[in-house]
Structures are given as C-alpha cells and as structure tokens.
Amino acid sequence: MPPLRERAALAAYSLGWAVTRRAPERAAYAVFDVVADLATRRGGKGVERLRAHLARARPDAGPAELDALTRAAMRSYLRYWCDAFRLPGWDRARVLDRVVAVNQDFFVDAMRSGGGFVGALPHMGNWDHAGAWACAVGGPVASVAERLRPEELFERFVAYRERLGLRILPLTGGGNVVAELRTWLRAGNGVCLLCDRDLTASGVEVTLLGEPARLAPGPALLALQTGAPLHPITVAYAPGARAGAHGIVITFHPEVPVPATGTTREKVTAMTQGVADAFSAAIRERPEDWHMLQRVFSADAP
Image (cartoon, rainbow, N blue to C red):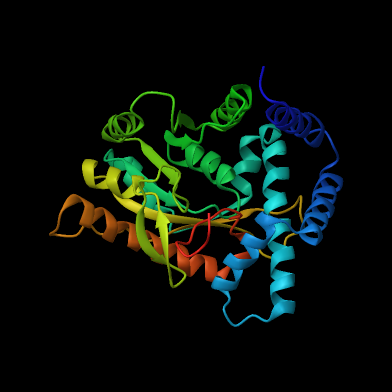
C-alpha cells in the first residue's frame, strides 16, 4: 500500500478532478484565487523560492512590488491547476478559440513538411492547453512525464494528457525514452518538452535570467540527432481576461541554429543556451506566469 502522503495526494487530485470540473466556472476560479492568496500569505519553501526567482526576473523590484508579483504568480499557478481539472470537459472549439498563437507557421509548416518538430517549453501559463491546441492544429505531438507516486496518480495524469491528444512517455521506468522520441520525430511527428528544470542530473549549465542554471538537454539533443527544427515555445495567460474567460498566448520563437562545429556536448550546450535566452526574455515580460517553485539556479541550495 502506498504511504499515507501518497494516498493523500491521490485523494486530493481525484477530488479536484471530480469536484472542480462540475462546479460553476466563475466560482471554481474564484475559489482557486482564494487558495492561492492563502498559500502566498502562509509562505513556505516553495513560495519563497518562487519569490527569489521573480526577483531575478525583476531585479529592480522593491519589496512591495515583489509581494504583489508573488501573489499574482501564485494566482497564475493555481489557475493552471483549475484549468487542469476542467480541461477534460472542454470541447475542441473551446480549446482552439481560447488560443492566440504567435508565429504558429514555425510549427504548422514543420509538421506539414514531414521532418518533425521539437518544441522546448518552460513551466509557463498552461502548457497542457497549448499541447491540446498543438495536437488539434498540427498533428501528433508527444511529450514526457515525470513518474509521480503513487503509480495510480501518475496513470491519472498520463490519461488526462492523452485525452487532450498528446502521446505521453514516462521519464523513468519505461523504455529508452530518447530512442522512442527519435523514432517518433523521424516519422514526421512533433515533440514538446518542458526543460527549464533538470530532473535527471544530466542537465547542461547555461545562463538564465543572467545567472547560471541547469536546463534539461533533451530538446537540443533530439533536434541535433534527428535534424528536426528546435523552437523555444513560451505560453502566457492572455492579459486582462478574468479567470474562467481567459485564454492563452502561445509564442513560437525562431529556430535555434545548430552550431557548425564542436562536439555533441558543445553543440547541445550552445543550443540549450539559445533556448534559455528565449525563456529569459519571455519570463522577464510575464514573470507572474512562470510557475517555478523548485530549484533551477546553480547558486540556490538544494
């Protein structure tokens, strides 16, 4: 039997999917705003780490501005979770109508060409909504999921994302995920990976928001090995819209070039730095939509 903490997590998420999806929309988002505000006032390691990340994005911000930005960021983070619990009930029209896509031809043209497409994303806005949109507009897209505990919770998240149209591979405990993604790309499909956090201790050190940070090398490595174009993708909530009527803005950034010379490691590092540069610009523009409550920067204690 899973430990009590794991069983509690499974129960909480199961309740979220069961209750939030059926609640009136405006009421559901209002409740999640209240939860976000309570979590912000309570603080804790995750909230303090988020505040430190926001200070890097807005280095000139004073304490009052950082307080307001942290509150807004926690509301954005909880909005993501309210979305996640409600997304399975959205129809195709709602998924598409609530998206503004900037430079979407980078994605659509690559998918039509049959050469595959690699997208590198930070934890910004609602990446699940972006994935559902991508599958509806461009064709088959695969991603990778961290293996959560208990196993039933992991399976619930996999099923949730597969209902959105995504193909989900486990990061660990499955087959050779890199080999599977290479095969998938060479068949002309898309791969979109969250990479602003190193989960495997194989990350490369780059500069993010002006400081050393370790990012996952997977997107760059896959693009290098398959020849598929690598594009950073950032997602933000549409500004000014009330919760429940909001949408997202998906920005496809220009292709990251492959260096002409260097070892594989050097090329992957240079390409990952290109990804980090796009992330830095997007985070500085909309820091409240970067949902990062975990360690990213090399200077931070574990």
